[in-house]
Length: 339
Image (cartoon, rainbow, N blue to C red):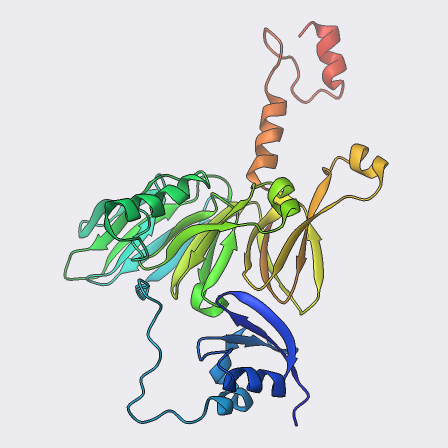
C-alpha cells in the first residue's frame, strides 16, 4: 500500500495530512468529491484529486451517460482572455478580447480601449453570484464597501466582430501580477485594494478572518479580498513582487503590510513580536504575519502605506521655505535655520 500522505482541499478548506488509504476511504464514504484538490510532498502545486490514479480509482468507473459535475449554482465560467504586461516601475496590462468576451475592472483603473469596446457600470462584479432581485445585488455589492471598494464595477465588452484591446494601469509604482485561479484551487485571498481587473466571471468578494489576532492586528481589519473562479485575475502591489511556495507545515513570518496574496490553503495568523525592547524600539511594529503552508504566497517589497509614511514625513512642517533638503543636520538644521 502506498504510504504517501496527502492534504485535501474541499471548498477552499485544507484538511489532512492523511494516508492514501484514508483519502480513499473518504472518497468512498462521500466525504471527498471529484471537485476536491490534493497536495503531497514533492508536488509543485495543488492538483485535482481525480488526476492522481491511486485516488481517482476510489471513485469507481463513470457510466457512459454520466457527465462531469456542474459548476456550483450561480457560478459562470470565466471568459478566456489574452493579456500582455508593459512597463517596469509603473506597469499596465493590455487585455485582448475576442468578440463577445468581457472583463471587469475597479473604478479608476481604466487606461485606454479600442473603438469596438463598450463600457457598462454594474453592481458587484458580474460573476453571476449575486442574490435574486435588486436587494440581492445590492447586498453582494455592498460587501465590497467593507474592503474600501466601490459599490460599482465597470464591464468592458467586445461588441465588434474582431479582436479588440483594453488596458488598465496600476495606481502607484510597483508590479501587476497575473493569477490564473484555475491553477490555484479556484480561490485566492489578497489584501484589500489589491484587485485591479479580471476576466468576466471571476467573483470579487470578501473573506472574514476567523482568528481574532489576525482580524485586529493584521493591518486589514477582519476582511480580505477574495477572488474566486476559473480564469485570470490581476492584482497590483508596491515595489518588487515575488512569490514563495511553502511546503506542508513550513512557516514564514513577514511584515503584515508586505503580504499581497496567498492561496486559501495557507494558514494565516498574526503573532506579537517577542521582547519588550524589540517591540517598542525595533521600528518594525508590534506584530507580524505568520503563514503556514502548504501553498503559494505573494509578497511586496514596498507596501503603499510605507511609501505614504515616507512621503508624509518629508512634507515641510514649518512655515517658509525649507533650506537644504539633503542636509545632514536634519531636524536640528531646521531648528537652527528657523524653519
